[in-house]
Length: 192
Image (cartoon, rainbow, N blue to C red; front, top):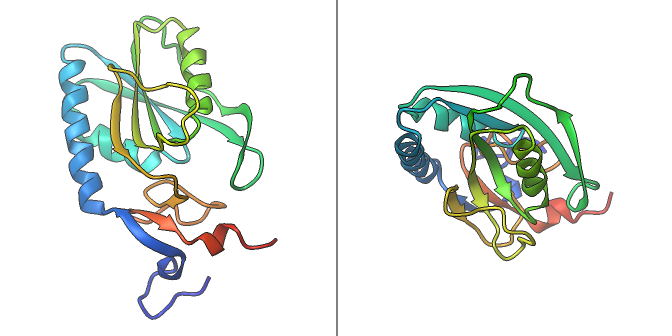
């Protein structure tokens, strides 16, 4: 897509802004304060899920006031461009032990919940002292399995729309937009 008169390659692809850069920044600061309070006096291992959570995780960990280290994992659950086929593959695993560590998974979005459930179950087998999750976005109307509990952290509940930006993509595009926007239907439903 060529740049348009507004100057951003994505302007013609976005239906609406769901959460602005300012809203995300404010909520991320609130989440970081809650996480810092919960883990006060403890060292935290923050596990970011690539590629989608990279922007959220970066902003989140900069605001943590507690000792922490970071790790990354990459998982895939999308068989086609828009629909998960239900299977989850580990593309990149963490490289150090999390046994007896307090672990926080940082994820961009919960859709069906199957990918996050797989990850939570996998990391529990590695004997962490505790395991919590911090998710930027959740689509409650699409969630099939409960993956967020009282010990977890959530940025925003959102409607069942295809969202991009702030780490979220469609076909590896739109990931670096500074806000979360609703992608126009004709972008992801166009014939191949």
